[in-house]
Length: 113
Image 1: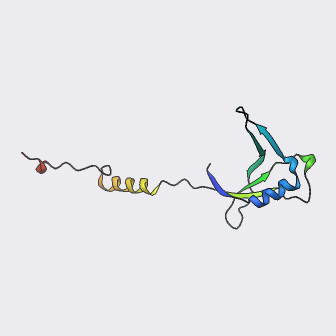
Image 2: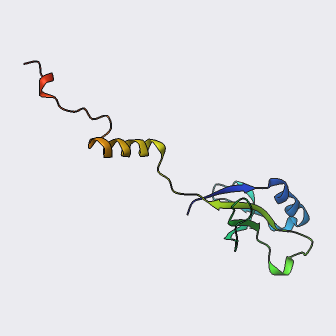
C-alpha cells in the first residue's frame, strides 16, 4: 500500500514540548546520535472531508497518556496505483498499431536495390 499525506511539524513540536520524555536518543553503529520519536500509522473508520483514511500519531505509553494532549499530528490517504502517462501512451500506441512505440515498419520498397 502506498500512501501520501501531511504531517503537522508544529503539532509534533507541541506534543514533544508537552512530553519531552517521548523523545529517545539513539546511538547508531557509527557513533552518531539522533533524537527519535515513535509513532503509529493506522486506518481510520471513516474518511474525513478530504478523503484521508489514515491517521498518524505519536506513540505514548498508557501510563504516560495525558488527557490535555492530542497525540495526532498527521493524516494520509492511499495512493491509487496508476500507470504513468508515458506508459499509458506507449500501451495505447501498441494497441492501435500492433507494434512497439518507436519501432519502424519494414517496407521492402525502401531498400536501395
